[in-house]
Length: 338
Length: 288
Picture 1 (cartoon, chains in turn purple, red):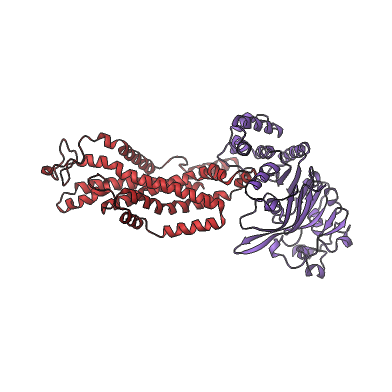
Picture 2 (picture 1 turned 60 degrees about the horizontal axis):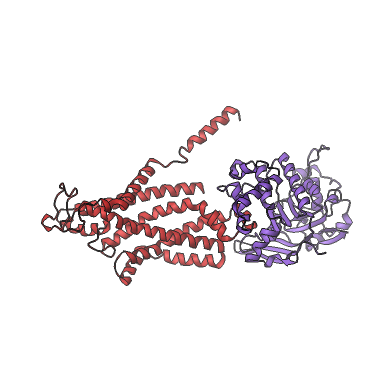
C-alpha cells in the first residue's frame, strides 16, 4: 500500500532581497492514514515551511523542487479548482495562534460555516446545525451561543478548539498541526491535545504535528523528524528518540531540557546560535556547534542515511557514536564563561 | 508592580487616548455641513420658487429684496434660487467621480493584490502612468475631444482619480492579505474573490470611505474649475463653479455678490470634505 502523503526530496527557495535563499533542502518522509508524524526543531529550522509547502501556503515567489504526493496526486502541481478541492476536502490546518488566524470582525458562526456554505453549498441553517455539532465534538456544549460571539470574546484555548472544529468540518484525511498548543497555557494545552488525539483516532486522520516540545512529540507522534537549518537530521520512532538519539543535534536538544526528577546546576545549552539554511557552511550545518565534529564533517554535507530499521540520520558518525551521544560532555569552567 | 500602580497605569493609558469612538468637534461640524449640503442638493431645486433662469435685465445687480433674498446677478436672475438649484449640478458631478473611481480603484487593487505577480506589476505601472498625468489636464483634453459639458469631464476625472484610490487600497489590502487569518481561510478552500470581497474589503472599508470623502473635495474643486473656465456646466444651467466664472464680470463693476456666494459655498463644502476625510483617514490608519 502506498502512503497517504509522500514528500520526496522537497527543497524550497524564497526570494530575499532579490536573491533566492534556500529555506528547505531535501526533505523526504511519508505518512500513512491514521499515523502521526512529529516535526521538531528550533524556530527557523523549516518545520513550518514543510507544512506550508503541503498546503501550498508558501509566500509568493517561492521556488520548490522535489515532489509532494497526496493519495497518488502531485500536490505541487495543483492549481485553481483542484487546489481548492484539495484544501477544502483532503487537508486541514491548525495554526499556532488561533487569534491571529481568525478574522476579528467576523463571528465564530461565520468562521465555522463559511467554508461549508461556499464550498459545499450547504444552506445556512443546516451549516449552523453542523457547526454546533462540531463544537460539541471539541467539548464546547453551548455552541448556539458561541456561534453568535466574536473571536475576542473567547479564550485562547476555546478559540483553538473552534479552530479544530473548523478543520474537522470537512472530515479531512490529513491534519497539518502547526504548533497547535504553543500559544496556550499548560492545562489548556493538555485538553486541546486530548481532543486532537481522540478526534484523530475516531476519524482515522493522518497528522503532521509540529512542535517545540519534545515530550509532547514523544507522547503524540508515532515517528518524529528532527529538523535543523532547513534539513532533516534525524527520523525515527518517537519512543526511541529520547533514549537513543541518532544525531548530535537531537541529543543536545534532549540534554538541554530541564528534568523534573533531577537537579542540575546548569543546563547544558548548545553553544553558538541556530543558523538558517542559507547561511550554513559547506559541510554539516550543525558542525560548528557540534562537540563530535571532525574535519571531515565540515568538508561536505552528509547524506541522510539509513542507520537501522526505520532509523535515519544525517550524521556521518551516527553508527560510530550511537549510544554515546547522551553521555554528558565534560565542560570546563573556562568554556562556560566564554 | 503593586495593585495601585497597575490601576494608575491603566488610568494614565485611558487618559492618553481620550476619544476612541467619537469624531472631534471639527469632524462633527464637517459632517453636519456635508449633511446639510447633501440635503440642499436633494431638496434644493424643490424649494426654488423663482425660476433660476428668468432674466430680468432691468434689475441687474439688484440688492437683496423680499423676492430675492440674495439679490440678482448681471442678467437680473435670482441669486438665491440659482445657488439652490446649482447645488445639485455642483455636487452630483464630484459624487459620480468619487463613486466610479472608488469602485474602479478598489476593484483593480483587490484583483492586483490577490492575483499578484505580473498582473500586480502591470496594474501598478498603468496606475503610475495615469497618476503622473494631472487630472484637470486629462479632463480638459477629454472635453476638447468629446465636447464641453459635464459628462466627458466626469469620465476623465473618474479615470484620473482611480490611481489614487487604487494605490491606497492596494497598500492596505496587501497588509491585510499577509495577515495569518487569510492563510487560514485559504486552507479552508475559499476562493480568492470570496476572501477579497468578504474578508479583506470589509476590513479596509473604513480607509476606503475616508479616502472617498477626501477625494470628493478634490473632485468638487476640479469640476468647479472646469465649469469656471467654461468647459464644464454650460449656461444657462446654474452651477457654483460656473457662477464664479460669470460673476467675474460683476467683480470689476464692484458687484461681487454672485462670485462671492458661489465660491463661499464651494469653499465651505470642500473644507468640510477635507477635514472630515483627513480625520477619517487618520483614524483608519491608526487602527490598521
